[in-house]
Image (cartoon, rainbow, N blue to C red; front, side):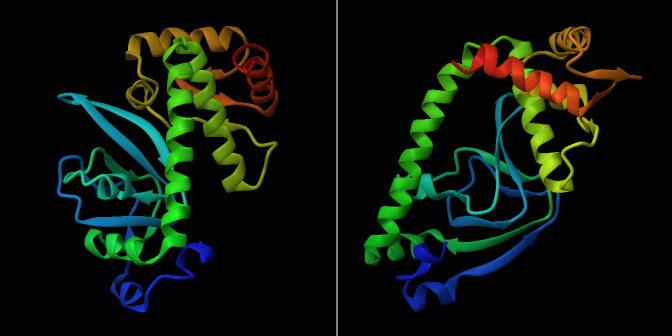
Length: 223
């Protein structure tokens, strides 16, 4: 981040503001004018896409260092393409889109770094989307649960703890892209293979179960 801002004109820096957004609040909404760029300095957020009325798909989490609204701004797309909501309390750096473009026009190093980052992200996304679309529900669930556990291990600084999945069936359905009925059926499959434990409808994952899922992923999904 220091490299990125090294050549930023003082006029641009003086126009940047810091904004704190509470957990569960929207940072930006799809369809709204792309008036600002948001840089996540602290906390986590999630991208949301609404394909059908009242049907929400959560498709990607964003952490510190992530730029939001940048792609639309650089592409001259007038409106945000997705909605982004905070998963935790977040601290953001906010830059007006017109000031961001002026910065990029006058700072070749910053433009190079951001272009490099965007192209890398698009390449990874295209590759991963092709693979993900081919996966069955259980495999998507395994990937989701492993990622969930990794975040919990990182936040709690304890890789031996039992993880409890604090997500409703509706939230799992939205995140994974299958119906709640299919989600429930595959949760039973995961429990039968001892990848998860289910008590009164609540999903938990021990370190042993985490390792088993990780072994499954490396054996079947990562070639």
